[in-house]
Length: 188
Image 1: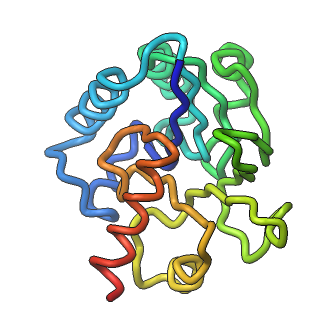
Image 2: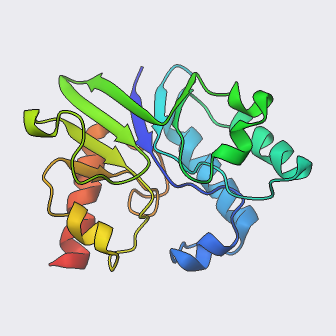
């Protein structure tokens, strides 16, 4: 059993391809690639902590059905820390119950580390002064945003967004490496 982290997949969101310069031809290509990448790493007994914005598409009945269908294709035990785009889908109980749990923030002990998960990047978080880690999303790969510029100065804050993590869920150690590489390559 392994543990993975991810954020900001935005299944179903056509505009995110241009907004984040994602390497996909269209939303169908993106969705299929994200599912394939996810399932190539995650087994059914693995835990995946999603720091928000799993789906962003139509919010009508057809969009909810698409979100349900998409999430059902993902391997693992899914833990959702809701982001700003998740709330309309979570009103649907069938969608909501696809997750082992849904929180707005989550505290986790993993590999001897205390981790605070929230979709939004925070300047200080629970356990900040005691060495806890903060795993977040929301800022994608926007290196010019003030939030990104600030968060990269914090030693124990990690962006779990797929746009900087190879478009797949990653382990805690991989998450640290992806953040270091992203911060170094774009902000040296």
